[in-house]
Image (cartoon, rainbow, N blue to C red; front, side):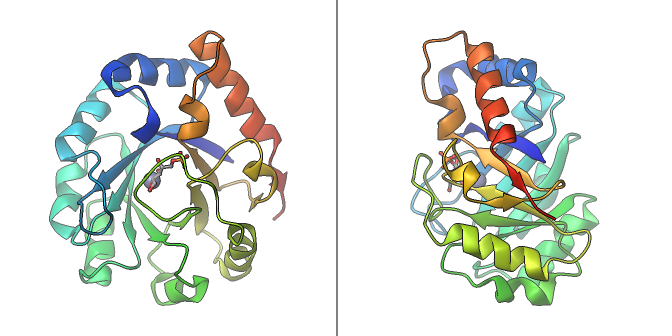
Length: 222
Ligand code: DX5
Ligand code: ZN
């Protein structure tokens, strides 16, 4: 299982140091949220930001596009350490085209589902998806509480998951909710607010402790 840090809640004016501290603490990768103010009621990072992040770190980067029409941005975001691009099941753009664009760019194909979207709604796309990103909260903002129905939803998803389709969980991941969700060896937990909320300790020590807590809290179950 891997732990990725969502940069949405980091100290943005100090981001180079934040990323260095995450790397030193042993984070597995970075998660960057792109928003368009339309698919979600917020604006986050853009393509140039992703490129700057990629040029400043060797960590793998996953790009989460909360964007209604992601296709034009897929190839633009494909820098060296971008390992995957995740688009949403609920977009108004042609979803098959968007997923194929990601695949054709040589990137991992991610499909995200909002809390209201049923697990069965991904089945038509299963053959092309590398990872399903389950939103633990309504998308658009960090620091929300994971919705109570999410652990059962993940169980249902595991039941229909094909061999090489992994699961990522994004939103509301913390030391409590990690004990509620089932996660397998190849799956990923994405944490923002939990990792970046203030502690009195040294930054790297604090992050190491939190990463360890998330790893240890996992109830593995293939
Ligand atoms: C929310 C974003 C998440 C967010 C998670 O729409 O997609 O990546 O940063 O933040 P936390 O971990 O604070 O819920
Ligand atoms: Zn995200």
